[in-house]
Amino acid sequence: MLSGRRAFLVTGAALVATASVPSLRAEDLPASDPRMGPRVIGSPDAKVMVDEWFSLTCSHCAHFAQEVFPQIRKNLIDTGKIRYRFHDFPLDQVALLASMVSRSLPADRYEPFVTDLLDHQDQWAFAQNIDPVAELKKRAALFGINAAEFDRINADNALREAIIDKQDHDGAFLQIQGTPYFRINDVAAPDVVGSYDDFAKAVAKAS
Image 1 (cartoon, rainbow, N blue to C red):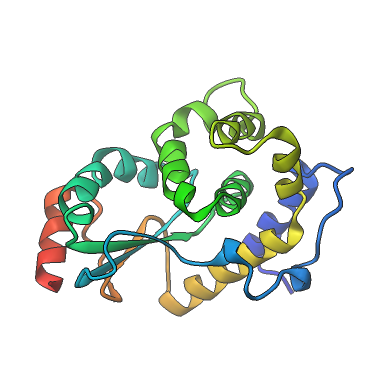
Image 2 (cartoon, one colour):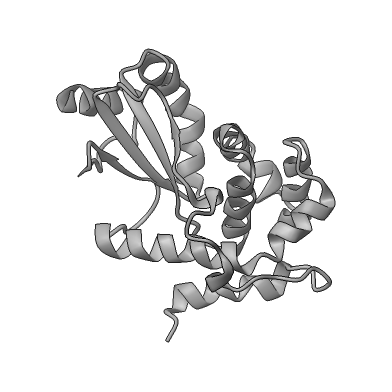
């Protein structure tokens, strides 16, 4: 039986999918589907691996992306000190669709798109009198996904299920209670969200 959260996410398909576009079943998604592959930036030679689990409609994730991540990118990623891996952990149906769209982009456009969505979260996800799906569609177009492709992604229940399955696995195995959630060299790092200094200290300790 589906958990309450999983059922809530899965039923989102009925709320936002385009009925005229055929969808796939989860079992139709190849195990080697590149859309579910790692999304990583930074030098492969870095001694420190940072993993972040995030939801694209999480205000704490947006704050981190806007206030802390630019310094991480400049001082730690671009300098080769850390490798940074992203994990989708959508907390609602809109975030799930946004993750589906981001996963459908070429891998090198994943992080720029995710960063754009988090930087402008208040405009596309939470502004008054807007349809977040329609606004997401507009932002996706800026990254090369046209309206027809967006609708196909929206109707792709195989991808939807694959993201939820990965989220369920990570949530249960790592006991993730909220987002953003971080691990540094595969050790939980709950105290890095508040500031760049806290983050940098944790990285230095792991180096």
